Image (cartoon, rainbow, N blue to C red; front, side, top):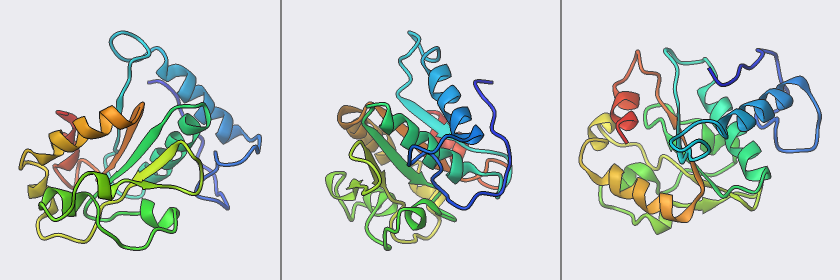
Length: 178
């Protein structure tokens, strides 16, 4: 365990965006600090997968705010909307439906065209899920995800990967191998 977050009713989905000092923002800062001791060697955490057992537990909230707090510290961050079943992050960033990860995995888009800089912070880019696909879990095993992640590794300091709950879908298990 590298940190914990309180559960509270919040007005905003991105609580780490501004200079507000609140308990939950400090908890995200503690998690950011704790990440310096993760990885091999310590401090070398490049890819972070966020999942939970069931829907509604705050995966997208945690992914979004962790990405923002890392971007604010100077890290160049890509936030991947890899919950291809019920994506929520594009909505948080007011990004209309567009080409994204599913389109890349289907061979309908290049890696370069699915990375979208956000207006929230200059160091934070979004890689949206893309247009809905039939059997999205099957797309994750076609070999293209590894290529995409390697491409993003070269462009960004950290990849935050938001994914589907592991009790409902196999996606997190597939993605975790990367």
